[in-house]
Picture (cartoon, rainbow, N blue to C red):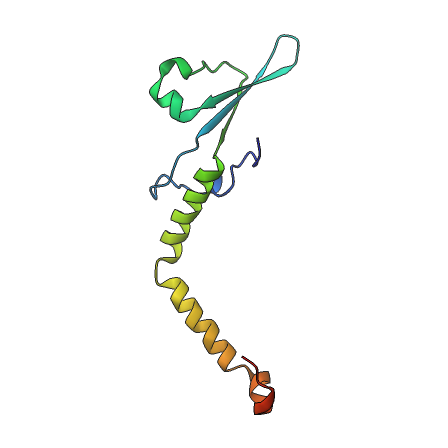
Length: 116
């Protein structure tokens, strides 16, 4: 199954509010009369379209929503874009360049030893 019960980044963020992709997998953990447990896997995109693919939830069922890896990547990309925007990486690169150019250790080296 991979991932955890939190579903990675998507489990902790409201990605749908930012236009993200909802979880694509649902797992229902159901206890049997023999005190065992069965797992019912539901493809959410199929369940949206086909009512026959929607199992009935019973009392005592544990429900786990999980993002597929591609959904996680997409939501991470959207979250990063809306958090840092387009220009943030360029500004960060300029800041790091300024730090490297003003490095006190580098300024004390003789000119023949400066590399890069």
